[in-house]
Length: 188
Ligand SMILES: [Fe+2]
Ligand SMILES: [Fe+2]
Image 1 (cartoon, helix red, strand yellow):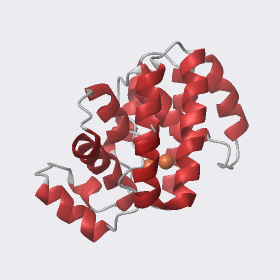
Image 2 (image 1 turned 120 degrees about the horizontal axis):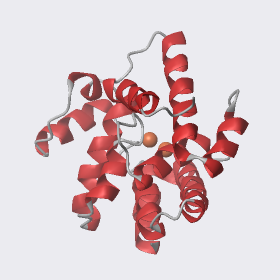
Image 3 (image 1 turned 90 degrees about the horizontal axis):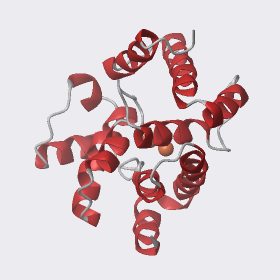
């Protein structure tokens, strides 16, 4: 873990390292509460923003070098590209082959349908870590300790409303994630 933190400090800087460590802490609280594998959650949370400080131009270049096939929405947004690119990069940097960890990193921004508990926890922890502040966050924080699916549905509602208000593109995975939960009857 110390080696990862040193590499991270170099790559993403002190400020984002602070965010990352908060996400780790939050993830471990949720992992304990929901009986998820703590080691996996910890590694995924530690590495979730690994590619965040790379410019979009450089990210697109790396995506080509790695032969990653990304959709046209992801490839044009640094908000989105750092998930899948980061997952690919940590495979190389730290020899991480665990697909669940890699998926948690890949989908931490968009979410997706049928997420595993590890994916759900990293997605939520990133959204509710202590430095985040927006209307309704306290309710989501509280719910995340009780019911992950309900908390994620609330987070997705909040993300989608925010993106609509900004007139931003919404990634299809985010819509699919929400539809999936609604079809399961979450939030009724
Ligand atoms: Fe991120
Ligand atoms: Fe993050």
